[in-house]
Structure formats: structure tokens, C-alpha cells
Length: 354
Image (cartoon, rainbow, N blue to C red; front, side):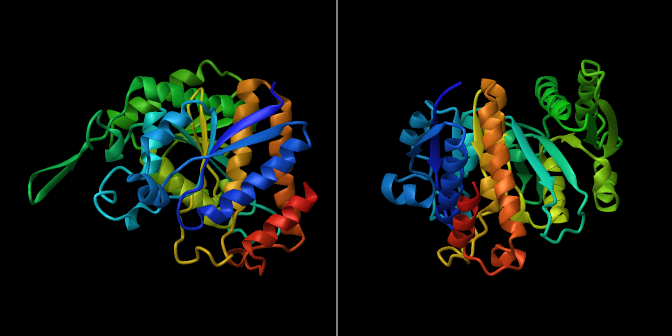
């Protein structure tokens, strides 16, 4: 247990410099109530880093991050970067690969007073983050897409026993702290060797957790069932591409992609980063919704609470979520959720209840 929590901050592009500071102040207040002080280290990242350091992910930033267990990262807008930066690996991908952040945990839970298509949804998608069907995660050097002729494009999908086992362990450990139910999502009826291996390894891991109920779904059926009866599911574990798609669906069912929080983590490091993008069309206008960023920081605090066996960190995370719920219940919401509050007004009301 520590009394000072050191956190690296990469504010990012677009609305990042608006929503990240709100999450920082909220976390400071929640942690202070538990007797924990925060030391923030602001580091260059994204478009501003291109202007100041000549690259979106400076080597100096990566070197500095080696000393941090926790980082808070805003969105990046790499599609708008000038060349050659636009064609290079996005800065978020560099972070994920450099630090081996193999697990992407994406909760989806409806919040009272925010209209939701599925008001009973409360699940966690545990997404394997280092391989699968995404081309940028399949090769030690370069990407797993190539064109043998101008008219033929090929993509390589990679599934390994090691990666499947460690993400399954993450899912079953999470289920132990939730409602004790894991659903393995795959497409083994078609991708028999790759997602078949993923499915089989997940069921092998399930034998170590007899107290957790386990079942399986094909990814297409899973998408339909999330719409029809999302309340039946607790923890979904799946490969990279399937997890990305299902988590966006689950976020919309819970109310909005603007609510979608996320952490990318390994066994020793965690990165809090909201699922949404940089939204350059509303940047600087005070319209950005900071809720997903705040919730991402709460999830990072939960991760740290488990790693450090420090219940104060979990209490601070619970306080953040309760504060968000109270703020929304008071009718204080940004325009994307049907309210009229600015980003800073939402933050001010949240701070007052922490």
C-alpha cells in the first residue's frame, strides 16, 4: 500500500485535452478521500508531440513511461496527421506493443437516467489484444496483410496457445469478482484451427475454475443475443477483432459509445483509455462527454487495487462510479446524452459529490 500514486498522462488529440483533465481532477478527489495523493507526469503524445518532437510517440515518452505502472491516455487522431506520421503505426498501437498490453477490458453497463436500448446490460468483454485477425498485431516486423498481385489481398490471422491461455485466465479471474459466468466467443465452425484453438484453450482454463459457469457462442449468434437478452451475460472472452466489434455493440446498447470505458493491461502495467475517438469536430467547444474517460480511470484503479492488494484504490474507483451516477441522476449531462452541461460543468458537479 502506498500513499502517493504516480501516474503518467498523455492527453492526446481533439477532445483529449478537455476530457482527460476532468478525469484527473475527479480521480484526485476520490483518492484524496482514501488518503492517497496523486503525482501526475504529463508527457508528449500525439499531434502536439509531432510539432514539438517530430514524432507522435517520442522515444523520450516511451523511456519515461518505463517508470510508471499506470498511465492515462487520451484519444489520438492519427488519420489527420501529416505524412509520414499518418502512415506510421498509431501512437496508441505503439504503446500497446511496446509494453505488451495483451488484455483489453471493456465493460458495458447501463447507467440509470441515461436512455439505453438494453437497460439490464451489465457485462465485461475481455478481448485478446496482441494477435488474432488484426493485421497490425500479427508480425514481429510489419503487418500481416500483403498483396501478391495488385488484384489480390491476403491477411494472416494468428492465434497461439500462450495468448489464448493468459486472456482466458483474465476472464475467469474477472468472473470470480462478478457473477461467476464466462461465455467463450469464437467462430470455430468456420475458422476451425485458429478460433478453434482459442475456444479449446479457454475450456481447458475453465477446468481450473470449477466455481465459474462457462458456455460458448459463435460470434454472429453472440451479436444477436446481445441485442435480444444482454442481461443473461456476465463476462465474454474473445479474440481481437470479435471483441472490438462486440464491445462497440454493447456500448451502444448501454446508452452510447460515449459511455464506453476501457483499459489495456498486462500483468504489470495498465493504460486507461476511453473507446471513443478524438472527435475533432467538437474539440474546444466544451461539448465533450468526459464520462468514458472517468470510467476508464476507475477501471485502472480497480486493476491497481488488485495488483497492490490495496482496497483503498478499489474504494476510490467505486466512489468515481457513484459520483458519475449521482451527477447524471441530478440531470447534469452533456449534449450527446440529451443534457445541456458543458464538459467543465459536468466536471464541477462531479467534483462536488466526491
